[in-house]
Structures are given as C-alpha cells and as structure tokens.
View 1 (cartoon, rainbow, N blue to C red):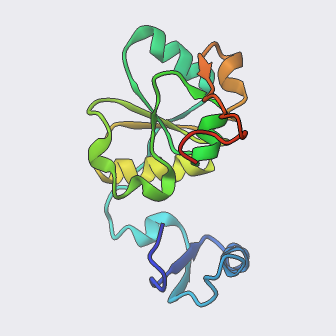
View 2: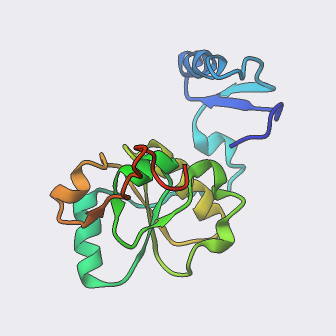
Length: 164
C-alpha cells in the first residue's frame, strides 16, 4: 500500500519485535527502514488518544445483517472474489482501496478478506477516512457456516473467470 521507496519507520514494544518485523519486510523488498523505535504505542501518540475499531467474526456479521442493513466490503483479490463471495458485498481489492474510497456506500461497514489480515489493514484505512467500520477476523470458509449466502462467478468454456 506504500509507494515504492516510501520511508518506513518500524515501531515495536521490544527490540526483538522490531528485528522480526525488519526481517519480514526485507522479504518483500523493504530492507532499509528510515527509523526504528521501541516502546509502547502510548509513547508515540504525543498524548493523543489511540484509535481502535471493533473486530468480529462471520457469525457476528450474520447476526448484524438480520438486525440492520450494513455494507459488506470484500478486500480480497479478483480471483478470490470470483471463487466465492458474500451476496451483496462490495468488492474493492485492498491494493486499490485508498484510491476508491469514494465508491463505498455511506453508513456502517463490515470489511473482510480471506483470513483477517487484509481486513485489519483496510479497517485502519477506512477508520482514518472517518468511516464506521468493523473488521472481520475470521476465515472466509466460515461465512457459509455462519449462514451468510455465498455466490460464485461462473467460469467460461476456457475455465477462465470473466474479467480475468
């Protein structure tokens, strides 16, 4: 989600956490952080309150959808979406989200991905854009088990999914 060459500051509660993050980032080509710091998040907030967002699972989403209308945002890649997605969900892959925020309907958002990591990143971006958001930290395979309707895109004769 960062432009190539953007400076990165690593923050961790311990030097071991920072070193582990630096190793992981090196695997994706970010091998020279601009700065490193250890401590607690409160130390870096300059007295400002820390932000957070609710986290839930697909069972909670199913319950909420029975009670009130919410927008479900799927931030998985196109092929993941085509393999199966929640009926009525809005699809914007995570790597496109920052440039497409204006396409997301107003109101309460529940964001999901395949397993929860990308949904947390998306929820953070959405919260920074002043949206009411809940991140779903759950395996997508549990959506149908929770009673949520999952639909699949039909493949063409060549086995390709339309639009791919």
